[in-house]
Image 1 (tube, rainbow, N blue to C red):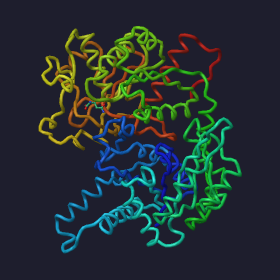
Image 2 (image 1 turned 120 degrees about the horizontal axis):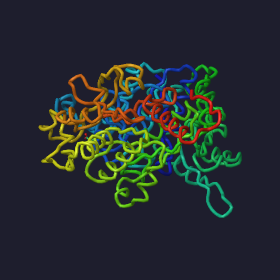
Image 3 (image 1 turned 60 degrees about the vertical axis):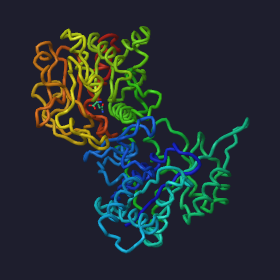
Image 4 (image 1 turned 180 degrees about the vertical axis):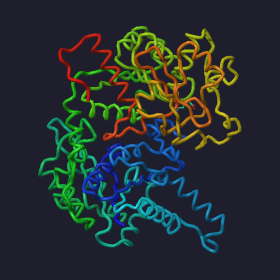
Length: 544
Ligand code: GLN
């Protein structure tokens, strides 16, 4: 087992997740079997109970784990699906240690952070590597070196490095090199301090990845090398990129491949980036811009909708159509007719998932605009449920149509609590979660989009479309064209519309750079088609 640890210093939000994902890609490009484990040092058992404003979107895995958004980055960069054991939290570790203690597994012993908690951490890392059958396991430690929360994890990793011995474990430390002052001077002091902190714990980094607005000059690299005790060629500069998928190549260009081979004693092989470079080139040279509106309530924090933005990048890298995302705060829409009018000028509208009453009316207005103006529309989860509510209100004349999530005793509960949720008391990990089979109606729009009638998609919801309204929906042109094995509604589409599809599941979680999601491709294709009918571009080449 070879382990590559990625830690972070100075501040959080440095792009440690992207660095880790890119290092994984770099190894994978050499045909090395890799996997990634994320450590989140918070006490929550999983990310499911956290507001997206805390750590960004909650990413859902096939097995239903509600994970940190970095798991999404790993899956996208590696083009590999991961499971719940790949996201370790203090909550999970403590829970399992305490369960073992109650069972009597440690009988006679005082249960302590060292060796019991650290032992549990090491056991999990080994288990993940073994289960995944990986040659190299990357371990990203969330938070910043020096945080009290991450201490047991760093201690466990230090112990593991001793146990595994020379050449089997490497440490990559990601830091910030800020550029300050009137002359724009790059400052290395924060990096020096954070490396000192790491070394005090007993960890000596093999590589330093310096993040910042600009590339590091040679003398700054030398300075970091001198103060931090790493060779100058192991100081890697990763300035901000306009597209995160460039990062593996930025690392590659500075010789990180051979460096890792040396640190981990791997045979250095030439990497293959053929497909990766192709999609980067297509993304870079994209033309024919389309404006896609995303109408949500967490729009101030883009990370809250990360998988959606990434899905559109994948489409751009595939179709060569420039996707310009426009963010609309759904709370502002009912207050501003001008905003609604601007939204009406979009080439496509996406309403993502969400919870609770805030911002709901704006989403309904946005959906009405898409439906009545023939603007291509994709509704995801709450956005799908809102599409049913909008239709009931404006096509079935049920003005009070709503979801029982907002009004538990609603007169017209078009969206109601899932069977089996009524008795649920705990909120953590109890929604309908993870990959579920969906059967699509032959001849429907979605079946055409997917080119098949059976799909697996990831879910995260507690409410569903009330089947009592389906006949009335169908009579007015809103068809249920996807159902779960138990008959629950998974897809609704408006027949008489260029593209109006709502899905109960989360397609954004399955989109990958190398395999863009069919629904996002279809949405953007519909936007392009509509735009070109309105203003045809002379001899526009056909879409890929
Ligand atoms: N709040 C809705 C539900 O629980 C939708 C959830 C979501 O959008 N992820 O069913």
